[in-house]
Image (cartoon, rainbow, N blue to C red):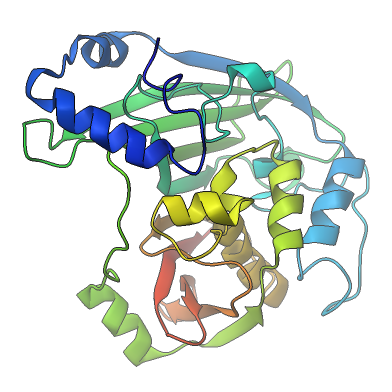
Length: 326
């Protein structure tokens, strides 16, 4: 029986995993992890940028649903919005093949590294204007593991696996890459205890500078459900309060890519931008049903933007980003 099969209850899985790990940490075999790290991992997914699917995304985003700005439905032939590729190209795995927390097993390290956190990422738009991806087109996405790092594998440490993934998006029938993306995830063994808020000098400087413009919204349970459905993401931490509490959080968490997308939406709905790249980093969890303030501050004159998402009540910064214009 595998470790996960012996810890099937979402409410108790992390306590079970912790006890199992504590019992076996002195003799934990890293062979499976070493074999996984050394193996070649590639995933190719083709998808059509359907306007109907984008219509569902627009009705999910407060910047597109008509509540703040006039609603403009997606039309075949229009340029794909910045970051909107995130709701396509998801693995289509049956439920029995998912991990116990509801996540896909693709590109995940082997047991017992079963707890996943989205740590950050980067988008580089290689093609622009008429050459960029357009609604209605057929697109190929090729994912590869770029880098794997480990930390805390010795007894007494906190075991972690850091996985960096690259994804190249190209129009079907073309070799040119339209969007190049990096995604960074962290995988852990032990259950989470309520952790201290992460702080850093760069976060303090952002708060002292203040925003050039901002936008406030409240991600509701409906928002999280809809974004999970759009991305075919069954991760319990976005949908199940009891499960979120088992990981040490008081409430369900907002998706990392949703927050990254909302930072892009803040910029692109306020300014007529052509974006070269956008890099983002998750610092602290953002919770459901709490007001989030999305902030933008000019850098390099008014050319580029520092972006950050903060909990309105506490001021805690959940994510930062840097947008570079063409």
